[in-house]
Length: 228
Image 1 (cartoon, rainbow, N blue to C red):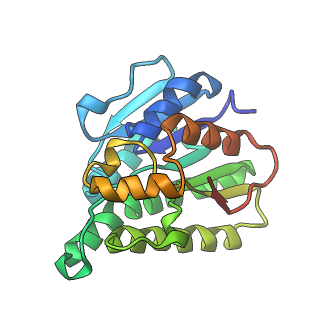
Image 2: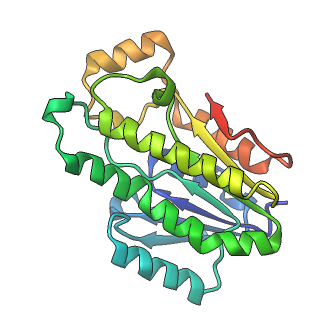
């Protein structure tokens, strides 16, 4: 089923993205992975295309779409893993730019790539669009307001798309894990991480990677919201 499919991972060089690609790249015809920092670039596997991009810049997103179009690379599967480092701070110490940076990295490029791909998915009567959310949309932890606000925006975005395109064979799925052991949480105080670990054991990247692959390879329509 997946051997002739192209998968695009926004934030493919993230801890979860690299774990997923290293384990499952052979399952797909083509893997497109975006990265920002060369130190995090995925290995040069034969069927993996690494594309350097600052996802917060519209000009670079437009160049990326032109690259995809000119090379006839139309994603069958889109996975949104892009996110800035988590900032832990009281609301009164936040700046509106803290919200903007979350939306520009997590939502804007995702919107652009889904819009670029959706007509092809309709034509092919196949598509999978997957977004990494967070269990914070139900746990609602304190001191993470910009992050939670963006995750709710993504939840609304995906819910609206699932409703609008339900007559097509396009699968929209959110994955909402609890806290994961990655560099993403390096700015969070240790006592908060320890408390989260006591409530629900911290997930490892391979657990999330396996669950992501399970969602992708499912032949049936997945649930919109999946908590792990």
